[in-house]
Image (cartoon, rainbow, N blue to C red; front, side, top):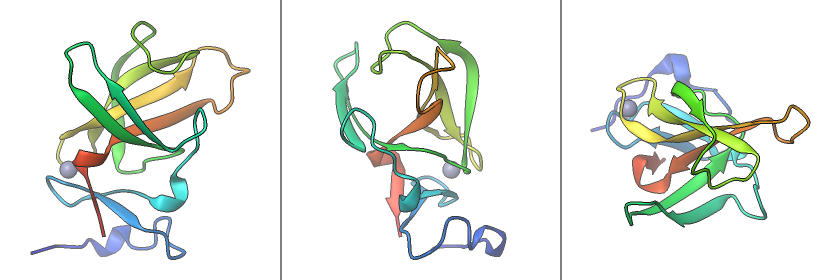
Length: 121
Ligand SMILES: [Zn+2]
């Protein structure tokens, strides 16, 4: 059973597909926020622990919050530091928030959200 919050209806919108948290079904972002980074908006990397990380890149994620200090090491995107990103509604880990080290970089920031942590509706 799915519960929708009327307060979140209309965020993004315009027929875009909505992405919700797989844990709490809270609205995270919409497909019109997908952003191409390095030629694609879907990325597959293997982290240092050997786990496959399959994620979308978004220009904004109203339902996610970035937590902690930005880390410049071990970044998958040269020129960007990263922080962990969590669901604003339930605290589930969703992915990462990337911000440019240089203010001349474009985009200045984006989000990488794991496909397995999103439910599209
Ligand atoms: Zn959640």
